[in-house]
Image 1: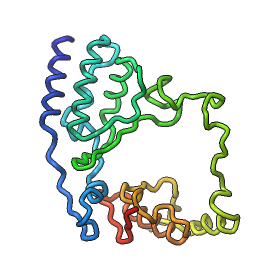
Image 2 (image 1 turned 135 degrees about the vertical axis):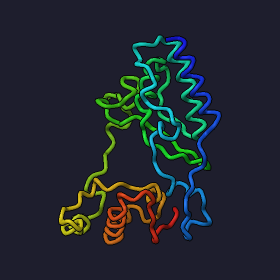
Image 3 (image 1 turned 30 degrees about the horizontal axis):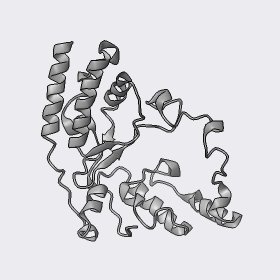
Image 4 (image 1 turned 120 degrees about the horizontal axis):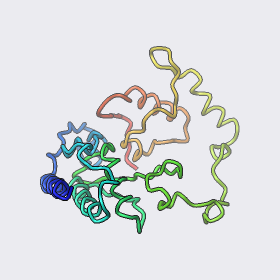
Length: 233
């Protein structure tokens, strides 16, 4: 196993020293003056194994490695992250190397963008104690009575405005259907990165929101999302 781990680390270091070619993107006219935004909006999401060419299957099971071997592979993987301009921003402190190894390798198929200009923050925490890969080491595993924010008022329906506004907003979608006649599940429509940084995202105007939902739904299966109404925040 020691020999195999050495070969694996050498391969990871080789990939880290030779990052993939910058993705070719066709920048639309309205984003010509902001290449970073164009990159964020148009670079596709691909699994880490696809960007690197290293298959997920090459990583041994955690139980077959000792702590030192896990630590060595972890360091090599983080170098690969760095070469892809990825930042693992939610790794808790004082996590045993075996846990880190298990999280990194089991998420090797995690889809990311290779944003060579701005980089991408990677968060593997699910926010759910039952599914969070960091387990008891994650900050999402906090009992309510120990959470300093647990007794604050959480936003509810009233935060959308008065009842008439709320009814108007949600009522707009009663007739929102796909071309095949199936009703659209609003929560299932992906939110492209371009929308997140747009002034119109979750606008107070129900009609604007509806137009955004329709545009995103129409392009939900497209590799590159485009929007003629985009306005940077």
